[in-house]
Image 1 (cartoon, chains in turn orange, brown, cyan):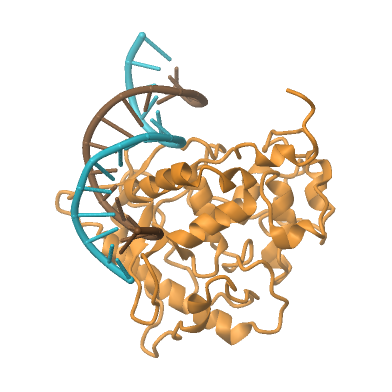
Image 2 (cartoon, protein in one colour; image 1 turned 120 degrees about the vertical axis):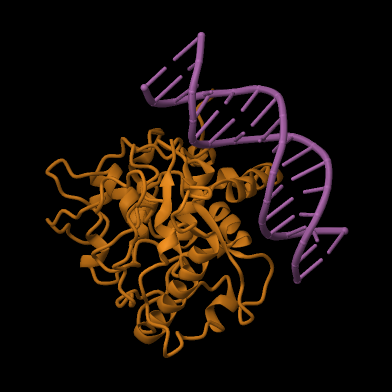
Length: 313
DNA sequence: AATTGTTTAATCCAAT
DNA sequence: ATTGGATTAAACAATT
């Protein structure tokens, strides 16, 4: 191949499966749920490769959404007009990429069908649960944060309180791949920095990922010809911004989501306090019309049925 | 009509 | 070599 001009690497195919791309998109937004069109947008915004052949990959993506139990459909409420449902990650899907590859999961996340006598794990239960979650997130956002500068519309990296991080959370993905030699992890950064956007680190961490709002300010740095997403030199991550906290964080709170009951985020606090995110400018309706959680609706443990999801052999 | 969602099937390919 | 996850194509229903 002739020497590619600069930037040409960025339109090579990113080393992520549709599943991981979709998970990124979902995890990257404040509500942790997105309509199909927003998932498309997220991917196209950040990965130039996917600005072409849209028919092909979007069909594939849709197939993945329907086919994989790790994605659940959340119906729009009357106050959320628009086309199509929201898509979210099943709360029990666990760390599907714990093997460190975003191309290929260790196991497929499958819901048990008609688990003999256990409570059936209705996707709708999960959906309802996540609806509530989203509501709470939004009300928390509304309550806490109009005072911080807006970023790119996707609240990447800054989301949930320090204790639990969904395995798909961007910060976890990064942390898993770019562990400090000395044992430092990145995942604590945003929780430590109390709401400072991490998009710089993110774009750097994913060489193939654009963040249009960021590309102006951050040079493509070292990624040069190095296509290996996992061999990313840590320095290029470090130099962007704050100092690293020397506090390792449990990346996988429950290492074994083993047969039967997997780790449910039962302890997700009802407030995402310091999340500074303004809502996505690209989806006005989600930004404006979300009603705050109804008085009675406090966050409870997820439906028991949710726990009967399992990564199946 | 276009978008969104579901499903089946073939094929590719990485891990084992 | 086998297994099984990922990708792609395609047909079709449902929704807006």
